[in-house]
Length: 365
Image (tube, rainbow, N blue to C red; front, side, top):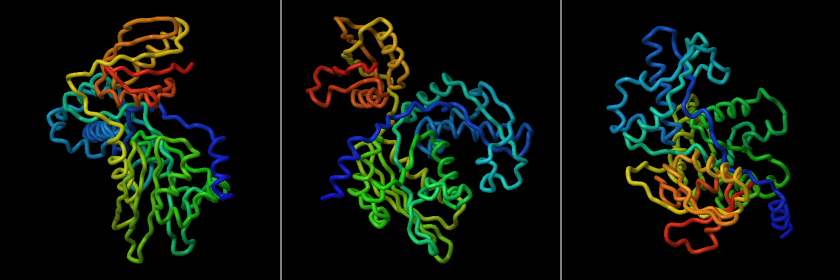
């Protein structure tokens, strides 16, 4: 009883973590073997693959048969490119063992890439993205079971095995353009989620421990190495109103993390992505608390930032109320979720019956 009371007290004073607007989705840095024209062309193709994976939320995008006809001239989508020194987290042996330590940075044309995605009918993961809380648990034959990141959070050492693992994990998440945070591993975390409950992927315990962080979802990833060197593990996530559990294994340590992250995110992002359609849905947005012309301009600017919206027109005004006519590709529910995740609109629609394709919000100054 005392434990649950402490949980409730700390939950209500915890800060809110909103979704994030992710930038730099249309550029990528990739390692290359040299500065020859053939290496540069391969680098552009690799960068295009990276960008399309970030924008669609699916690591298998480049294998789509619908995309193949558009890849004959990858250079046609390029805005700018440059040779640069590789950052330390990319200059690693699991990239190019004989790499001279430089890479190719490629910036693609946003309009050209957006058109490509729509023509190929690929999914779109909007840039206003959900943020996830990540619990990572490893079972080490020497140290036993523990949370990865707990020692790093306590600043015990910056050169530990856990710190190296977290660098690789961060690289994998950034390459997908997915915001995330790690737990603080403070007293509340220790009380709410003992290591055995986390290792056993007890979903209700994980959900309870994750509530205080107010993210859009949570991930639990556990793994161990067998005596033969094989890595085995499982992941469980809760996001978009669903939970899913899956196992993974890898013959070695080299790429298991990237493989597990890709498989996990491919499943998770389906709840937040949509397929662009030629026929858009016209909706009415009723927005209150718009008290000035500058506030109206801010509302309009925020709406135009959302990829799901094709067009916005002012329908009517009265006092501090705006009614906007919106054409949205992803449909009513996806538009509603995108507005809430922006952090600028308070949702009335959970408390009222939605009729006649109209959504109601308060503008948050």
